[in-house]
Length: 322
Image (cartoon, rainbow, N blue to C red):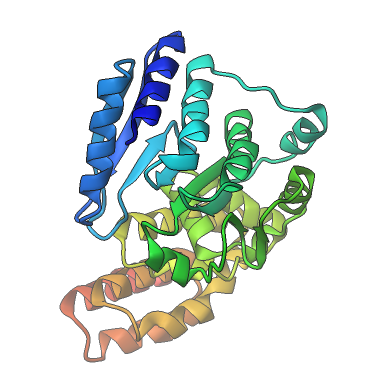
């Protein structure tokens, strides 16, 4: 942190009207130390900032979370310091100025929107894009923004085929590199087809406790989203649980729609771990279809773990119960 950056943070702290709280997410990633050091310096220079430290998943990247909607997988120094402070100022003021034309679009967004913005500390154009998007997260509770530093996390940049910054990603295949019109982005968002959501977007919906919302989206479209099947066999139990709750809600309102998952879910049965097999069987049992019974009987008579067989037995009893 340069003397100029320290001076700017002190000045900004004096302009705050109240205390601001942010979250430091640390993991087993060795770069967590850099995030911790930045937050220590930040609170030393700006006493009105409170840091809540949380342990993340071991393999996750460390991050700084602002409110519920903005996450930095980046150390916001260099050209990124000023928009970072502005984001904290929005928390302080609890409001932001949004042009009328943009607000009209925002009022139409009622489903989770996940945006990922790749930047670097040296990029002179990145702050402009950050300043464009962060106010949207304050104006609409469904918009989430993750800011990623390509230099600090080159593996993420490579995974997402980032060639230059700033690059903004929204559900494949939408990406913007360099400058863009905010109205263009919002036009794409408001006209998107939720049936084409990727696994990460659907997972985010579940992690935020919105299983009912996801169920309603599929009920409205009268279609089980293809990426949703990946959540039912996800390696993390909380994600699978959320997906199972979603299926129960769909089945309670439209059993024909829920039955769409039977064959594709069964196709995945033999390639997952035993614990996931048991959850698949539970979901199939909840659908209560007679054509599921022969498959469950095959599990009972096959070479499977006892817990898997027990799950099959319970599901079969549920299906054949008078």
